[in-house]
Image (cartoon, rainbow, N blue to C red; front, side, top):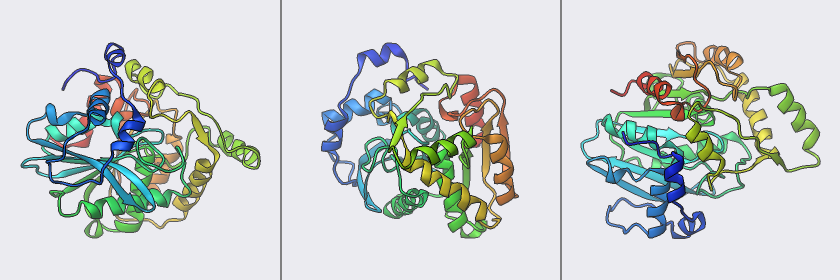
Length: 325
């Protein structure tokens, strides 16, 4: 793989205009003939996701999709001769641009890649970093898959980081009660969100603030051992600096709904770092095992929360655990 897309020296040399990219977004098609705008080229280069230039046989389809009342910014990296497709779901406050390392890993191991910005994230529209209900994320997943149904070489592998993992668990409860029912051959949950760390404090803060405020200032946590990545995120133009109270309310409902769901026979892969201070993993893992008794759990010693952007040695452990080779 190439050097870090988050290195400080490269950040200083690049820029892009998010509003220009949003204005240039066209409906997603698969002709492979559309001309990429200068704003889009700057966006791809800024995040190091210009992988059609770096990985042989890749065509990068990029555009917007109407899904569940949202306009979703979507990327499909179509690999000639792919032996499967990886469907990637990013975490809270994230967007597709931060997942270049995982996208490249999947491509170089023979898989096409489908990834999009969740509603309210990145270049997708919707209230910034907010959602009415986590089911909205799941409904968007269903519609994006339907739009690409005839383009995705199987088998399909789903990989979700944090909130993306919550979306995939919600999907599994609805669509994967047994392996035979599920469109995904495998689901990998990276540091999946059931409830966050310091949940009692977050819950109390929500109760106190809900009548008076729409959000609180976000704290940027050291959720990775990659210092270049942490510095990059603090200055990322697609980051929200506010934690909306509405999103916390949606998460509260997700926790309650998770606990009420029946046990399912589907067996996800769970990858979790033992230095994670973002999700309450010591509480979450037993809950995941309760709902998915056949789950395979892989612990990564020393890894924090943002597993796909951890320090290189830890990140390579995560990628190896995915088993795409």
